[in-house]
Amino acid sequence: MSTNIFFLITLITVFCTTVSCDKETPDRDVLICGTADPINDFEWLHDEYVKIQIDDPGINAIVVFSFDGMTIIEVQNSLYSSTNISQFKCDGTLIDFVSSPDRVAYFQEYQKNKKEISVLYGTPFW
Image (cartoon, rainbow, N blue to C red; front, top):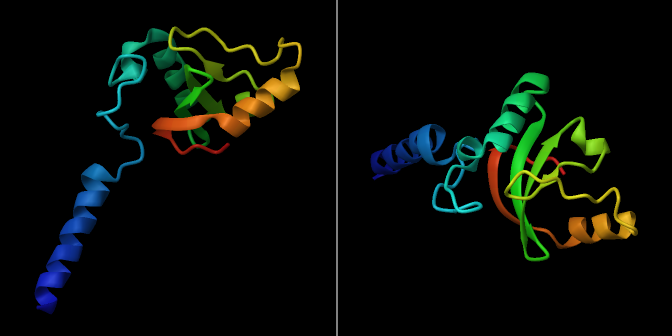
């Protein structure tokens, strides 16, 4: 019986490390802005993806959230982390938290109430 358990654990470990547990593989069952592969289907997002690969390959992520009835694609990297200008609509339009009349309260509301939909790339860090 212990041989069967060892075999099962080995099989699960191999499966997780090669297929299903890869954090850089997005959930293809979730449609983001109408597509299963937004990084490759949206030129603006692919450009952001390429930039974070070149500029800061170790510290970055692309995460999709819902907030206030919108789908928001957030590009997380070291440059954007200090500027709060990393949230985009599906068409690549920047969501302007900076120019909002009550920008601090609006951004705090976003941070508090956003709901994660999917991690498209990397490991989220904020």
